[in-house]
Image (tube, rainbow, N blue to C red):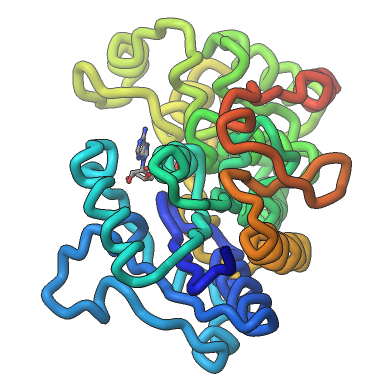
Length: 351
Ligand code: ADP
């Protein structure tokens, strides 16, 4: 059966390159003469929550998407949709797709979105996933859309932080995103020559990091930089933050969780430094224009998604292996365990 229409949605956290992927799908669909429907706010658009249908579903003409390809963010919007975990609501989504004559769906998102896509596949909707997340937390693929851009934002920021740190002989603490995955922290650390990286994949102790920092200071490295992955606190050995800070002259409230700012305060006191500053890079990592690497991946992935659907191949996710764009069954991909690059981690922390 030929595809009457293809639908596309972006879901989960936004990532640079989502628009480029939509543009590529639109260009490829236009090339094969298949109309494309944009679904708004992730799976929400399929549940028809808005009174005006145009706020849920919109025919995507090439003319519209050509303007958005290089833009950060996602033109289709993205949102979480908790109802979609409930089969009753997924049934509504399938009905919407049938009513709109959408015979194939492209989902751009992370592992959560892929779980939603898998459910749709099981309900008979041919679906293709494109990995759109800055976190790089999917085991089956070497890169996810937005990861390279996020890393480059971090590299740019860390270089600037290290320049000012050196001017003041003042070590720095920098927290980067990545949820439970330390890849952004690791790649940003190794790309900037940062001295210490702390990630959720490796259990760690505050006292050990302080020892590492002291070693750098003893060598005269006064701009030593500690890169913290945002999820690293989950792998931290128990540490009495309140007890430590209040006995060292820093007000703190009981039960306060560890954070980059608090961590810098602790390092300052444990290492006897005059000052240590913390920077949380935050959402600029998600809102940057996609790098060439992310844009080209988006372009290839978007085209492949349309070709697969046109050829009757579905229930697959697209990724990158050994530097080449590939695809594999969605359920198989979701079972591949993410591997952490311990070799780079040890290298960064050892010199
Ligand atoms: P990401 O795709 O970035 O990992 P989330 O984990 O928030 O982001 O998932 C995005 C959306 O995917 C959720 O809001 C929900 O609509 C859908 N989703 C996530 N997990 C499931 C699941 N197990 N079953 C069905 N839908 C899911």
